[in-house]
Length: 109
Image: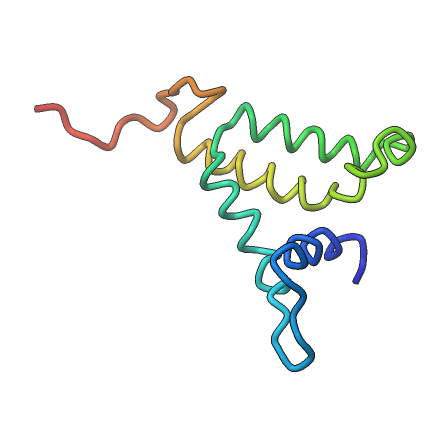
């Protein structure tokens, strides 16, 4: 377990630790959990804030001393923010305000 996979393993451990000869679902949770978060939280503005916060945690020297618990989640937050930002572009939403970036796919009667 490393700093990238540890938060995903902690999420899996909240539901129960896999037994000896069971498949560890943390491997499947790495792409699926952030993707589902992004689909549910799809917004350009909010996803951008999560993404910016994660990038600050990754690049900042003092982040580990200021926010040690959140610092351990930096890569999980990076993936969650990226998927939320991407889904926000698909949904055309910016801070819950609809944008008309790609136009409407619905015809008017």
